[in-house]
Each structure stands twice: as structure tokens, then as C-alpha cells.
Length: 267
Image (cartoon, rainbow, N blue to C red):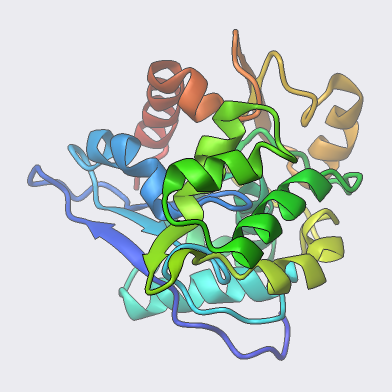
């Protein structure tokens, strides 16, 4: 754990539609994402259980803070679970959120019924977001009047329209134009921690599902020994015709894999 103060995270807390005692599911988004990105999945999962999707610090509607260490972000999520009276849960995280989930499971395994990791390994990665940072800085410094103008500005640095549409979820309309709600400066200052390995000193011995995209380079075969050293009971499943955003590219397969795994491990 760290000595950093926790932040009071924004959350989507969706009650189960059925009369069910199933274990709750906590969902943690990736870098530059938010709980809002997961709404279509949340609606499916809440049919059978309570679902809680968080906005991590410096993301979505949550407060901003300089500390982006995985131990600190995990403490934020644990504090939220305490606030919501959730003693145990299935923990699902994608990308950066997957490292938060792994950190939480390693540091507080008694709180984790099962761990689900979306397309990330517990290893350090190379710097790879300069274009994203430049695109968002361009928007922040220019204050475009609308989303079309914002997209034109981001296109100067990010060619893939799908990526620009994802980044545009961080835009809100302010008094003087489109503004960023993401804590860009805090994220940039903490980027070395973000691309680093998850927190924790011991393996997580509980049931674990790692979902990776067949077209993604984030969980390659040569990373599997390091993955299994941290997650020795991990079941690794590859979703065909999916890249890093496998939950968006293969939503039904992703939903079904998650639902089957957490249902099997319910308490």
C-alpha cells in the first residue's frame, strides 16, 4: 500500500435487475477511458448481478490528483468498495485498468473472488502515447467550438478515426468551447508509472481470466511466463479478430467469456 490519500471516485452503480445474490462485478477502464465507455456491457451484466464501473482518478468525472502509481489507484478502488459496502467482488480491468485490477488482487486478495484482465500483461511497456498527448493538448490549447473542429485538430496527430472518437469521449462543452475533462497534465507526469508493472510483491493465487486480442501486441506469447509468475492460475483466452479494444471489437464474445467465468466462480 501507499501513504497517498485516496480520492473519492465517481462511479456507475447499477443494481441487479433480478432477485439475485450473485457476487458484484467491479469494472475498471483503461487509459483515457471512463465508466461511460462500458455502458452497453454493464446493461448486460446487470441482468444477473450488481455492477459497479469506476472512473479512475484523472478520468471521467473523478477528481484529479498527481499520484498515478498502481498501488494508489488500487487504494482508490478499495476505498470505493468500502464506501459501497462491497466486501468481495469479481474485479475486471482493461489495459491500464487491468494493471489496477492485478495490483488490487495482489495487495488485497481477500477482496477478490475472481480476477479478469483485458489485454494487458503485468510487465513494463514502452512509451507509446506521444500522439495521443499531442492531440489532446492541441484541443485543450485551442478550445474548438464543436466536436467536428476538435476532431480536425486531433487528426493533425492521430490518423485513426476510431482512436479520435475514443479520445473525444473526454471532451465536454465549456463556456468558451470544447474542454478536456481528463487530467492530462497529471497523467503525463505519472506516465512512467502507468507504463510500468502493476503493484504488489506476491502472486495472486485466485481464479483469473486473461482475455487478449488476436490482433493485439499487448499480451504476446513471450510475455506469458512473466504473466504466469504473477497470475499462476490464469486462463488465457484469445478472442479472434480483435485488437487491444477487444471489448468493443468483439463485444458478444467478450461479454460471454466474462459472464461464464464469473458465474462459475460466484460465491
